[in-house]
Amino acid sequence: MTQVPVFDGHNDFLLRLLRDPARRDEIWLTGEGKGQLDLPRMRAGGFAGGFFAVYIPSPKDAAGLDYDALMDNPPYQVPLPAPAPLDAALPVATAMIGHLKWMERTGTLSICTTTAQIRAAMAAGKIAAILHMEGAEAISEDLDTLHVWHGLGLRSLGPVWSRPTAFGHGVPFAFPSSPDTGPGLTEAGRRLVAECNALKIMLDLSHLNEKGFDDVARLSDAPLVATHSNAHAVTPSARNLTDRQLKMIAESKGMVGLNYATSFLRPDGRKDPAFGFDVMLRHMDHLLSILGEDHLGLGSDFDGATIPAPLGDVAGLPRLIEAFRAHGYGEALIEKLAWKNWLALLDRTWA
Ligand code: ZN
Image (cartoon, rainbow, N blue to C red; front, side, top):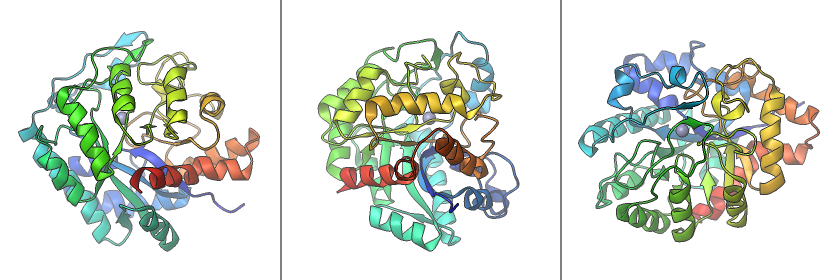
């Protein structure tokens, strides 16, 4: 069976280089079997490309606030960290983009701003990367820095990671919980949506609360996208999407990427990774029932989450594809879910 390439909606690999920059050769090129991503395991698993997130860690993260531990025993409602100020975020974002530029300089990865570039990178055996920001902490309210990052290749942006920004409010990590947890976009957030539309920067709604989601839906002229979120009807986490939101995404010809984070997959909200592919398939079936075959893909959250044990890491992707086959998904549908739908969505968004 030939390997199905996977184009993925979200990973946090750059955070690993940020934390250990002196060893990036070993972490990326050699691979050490740590975390869930590196070049050799991506090649083994058929990982062809995806969204690489620039994410500003909270000071509390550095002090050891362990979200995994706080989310271990549902029900839970984890407090959000304080906003990260622009002057603290700018050097971190610069460093993370620098790491992605270094990955490109090694000749193993290509930072893509068009789907033609993505297809060319895939054909050449290079990882096709989209520069994404998860949270707009590194963007000034006057939006001048948005243009700076766009000039460096930024083509996807989430106005918030869950912590609040000048642009909006995110969902706290809560289970069980509705995603309707607070106010939506600020005035600056509404300007950000218009400017992203003008620059053809894809807007990612995965960490927005429901009012923020509705604000973007009302204001944006682009398809609605949640790069790494699951079905609230299966797992009632605040981070997952209600059927109403899924219908709006389908109507906009948008996209959802399945998140492999155990806390957003397990119907009981627990983090324990000891469960089978059947749980991921329950989400896929529900998402397919509302989104249809053209608006669903994968959004792993590799290197940002605890993931199911049978998957293990990126090298386990062929086992997920095999589980799709065993579940009765045909080859044409599998190719759409694995990569073709993401490229079609980007064609609709960036054109
Ligand atoms: Zn995320």
